[in-house]
Length: 363
Ligand SMILES: NC(=O)c1ccc[n+]([C@@H]2O[C@H](COP(=O)([O-])OP(=O)(O)OC[C@H]3O[C@@H](n4cnc5c(N)ncnc54)[C@H](O)[C@@H]3O)[C@@H](O)[C@H]2O)c1
Image (cartoon, rainbow, N blue to C red; front, top):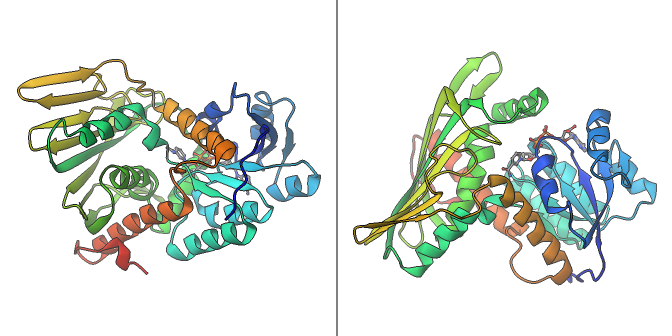
């Protein structure tokens, strides 16, 4: 598509004003080259709550009403429940708006095709934002890997423990659609949160040629199931292997300003290792990145390890992109399809008894 960068403030609408709005909005507050012109959510309470941030914005219960209103919009921050991404984002593109969508892109490849086609047919840009790629300790981990500081990479381990105690409040309505997604085979741990693990793996080590997965289920009560414990292993085209171990510690208190995910990334090289100790929560309160080599451990004490900052920087990247059209989108819609394929390969592997599945073979 022929994208023409904006040489004036971009007019933006927020569509979906729920929990994650509090994070995505960080890119917009105090940013001069953007004008938030509209707020959309069927919930009158949410509209009233978010209007306090943007008193001059017009508020609507639906995107259709915004489109019919005559308010001029260039780009949308799409923060819809995941099950609405395919049809909801298609609708937004159809109104002629560029879209910065929250992850996951959508649930299957047919929906992904629908989204790619809608972006093309309307000559609009679809970005599927990935805030983990903007989390400073992970960015520094990437530069350690690329600098050869720990030698040729042999493999890496991603650990995640999901806890039910601590963090910020998540409204029951957000949890309800996640359980609906779980019933559709797209669980909160492996698909919704795992999207970030798959993204980060692709970003750090490139395309994956084989995935093997063993995805379990924990039943908490009628209609409440979580897709854990789970163990996923994979091999990149460059031979580097990754493993993601996803465990529940249901009653463990985890200090967090956000969700209660205790996460770490540990990469092993020929001469050392590098480990990001925490991401969303504040599990291990050591320096957020440590690099061991030649008998010495180097600790990074001054990285911006507030997970919320990764949303600010991801959103600012998008706004900068709209003003320049330069550089990678992180992620483009086509790149997000690779993340989706990675997740779908894990499901296919698990269903078939943990056999190896090539993400490229998913149809
Ligand atoms: N990047 C991350 O780490 C991260 C973290 C949390 C959530 N998310 C993603 O953000 C998205 C939203 O999650 P959430 O936790 O904010 O959910 P939420 O349920 O808290 O908020 C969704 C909002 O969308 C509104 N809505 C429903 N239908 C709508 C429609 N047709 N038009 C406009 N608004 C509509 C709801 O009323 C609600 O206010 C999901 O895709 C989720 O996976 C990403």
